[in-house]
Length: 429
Image (cartoon, rainbow, N blue to C red; front, side, top):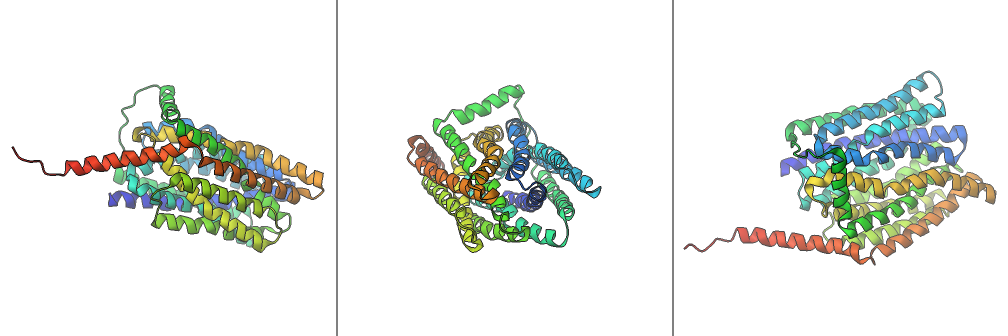
């Protein structure tokens, strides 16, 4: 199994580098759009178009991850998603790209990226044991934080000495690293042929049964969709809030300092992992993150913003780790791909609402208060943080969600007992 963990680390390294490249492009294009429109809604629309196609395709992508070679799907998804970035770069090489051209390129990239997430998540289950899940989840959270920790400060300095085109070139180069890592793991691991000959829609239905069959799991996923709604507001409006009184280089520094909280927690969880009390950790972690998010939107002092941003991001890996464990250990291994596609679709649907409405709400509040986009973003972030904290505290009081952890503990105890009995020498006759 140590060999499999090394394969996981290779895949993780590829995703870590890819995350940095994607973060560079996301940051650069957001600045590009805001400088040309001065609208939080335009930035939010960019985020929505980058997210929505991938969300809509999560469920069929999950079915594909259970039917076909997951490592090959990762290679196709990562490689072809680079075509959208390449399209934007070509448009910019002929002058300033139109806003619609950027939107189109982002959509193309998102469509192919949808193949990646369910395949990568299911591959973790292929490679690792349950005892390794928590540590692996910590590392995955750390890779996800790379786009917030490394990318903003790198992009900020790159924009100070060059322009968005250099950022796009770097991002395109990172796709080759990810594809190579997946290819190496695929050659060493091989693929398990699928014995699922059922129709495609029937396979999707099986994924639905795996998720909805456990009421506590389905309820947890529904609650998570509300959580992503409020977190999506923060994700969209933090940048226009800071840009209302600072430049892009300063924004990059602030985002990096704040996101270092996720990196610190990710490293801790990657080394230690979580052993128990996953529901409690999820509830308290999200509640703490909500309060920090609300405080983030109150002050216009960059140092104070960095502190609250750091604490917000530090709480997220604990919540993500707990959520991932509760879901992963309550889904049969053979249904992991299609189940995770469905889980992603439902739980992240809150982002769609946030991306679609938060910019409009911030612009409207800014006009009403007379404080502009910055004030509108500030008020909206504060209100969303309070709502997130309230919902998070309710999670720990829901019995069916708590039962998810209890049933997992009981299952593992029975498994360990059976394992111990199997090695006890039997009395000879």
